[in-house]
Length: 313
Image (cartoon, rainbow, N blue to C red; front, side, top):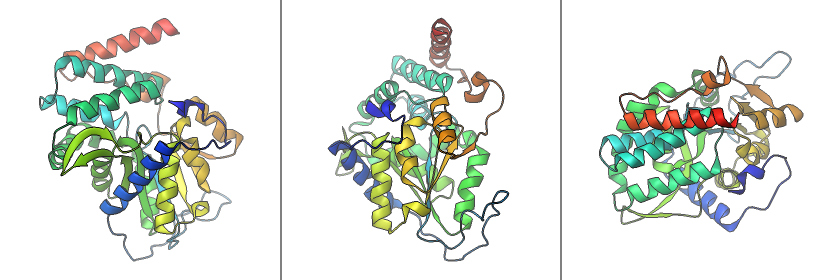
């Protein structure tokens, strides 16, 4: 995908599919959003020499959080795939593929568009013909099994600060909107912007609406939601770990680089964006290695990724 080219703040025109994906994500997010409280709690204290942020009671401000490796360690689509494999939605060889993609993601610490596209194509073929309600119910179980313990406490606290200030908080992710909505609700967030898979009469067709919500499509989704919600993007905040999300981060007045990859870190420093890193130790320890957890195929995929990583060094 072209998302790897987003290394500078220079805007490039979004494709029609990006716009379609963004608008579909915004519509789906608004339909599933949780109501926001009416109380106005005190503002969180600002950093030294800075005014309090977020600003309590500023209802024209909102926060947008990338999911994978920003809010949660690893990629939601891969955890979801593991859960579906456990429930015999697909075969062992397909799990090996998911394991390889997860290992690559965690070793590299960035979203590789080719691998992410491959994972999404796999997921679409797997869910084709299944009911949306069935996958939503299974998604709740998968969150408890594979995702709940992978939330970064530091990022969760940042999201809570916006909620405590009376602002809406949205996840923005390439993961399926149904999966993203489950995670948002379980974290007490407002809702989620995610990739919208086409369904007819509540059954998945195996096709997407537009394209995956990645790179420029994320920015289009945030822009569409801001218009619909009457938000002032200059007063909004966005958080991400990936340089692929520079289009989204560049839209708002308060961009944050969270657990940033090297390209985003460099870009953020050049523009004096705020940085937060909740990882510790060396690079491999920061992003983690997927555990075998008794699944031979997962261990095999990890070993293959490690071997390839060593050969490329």
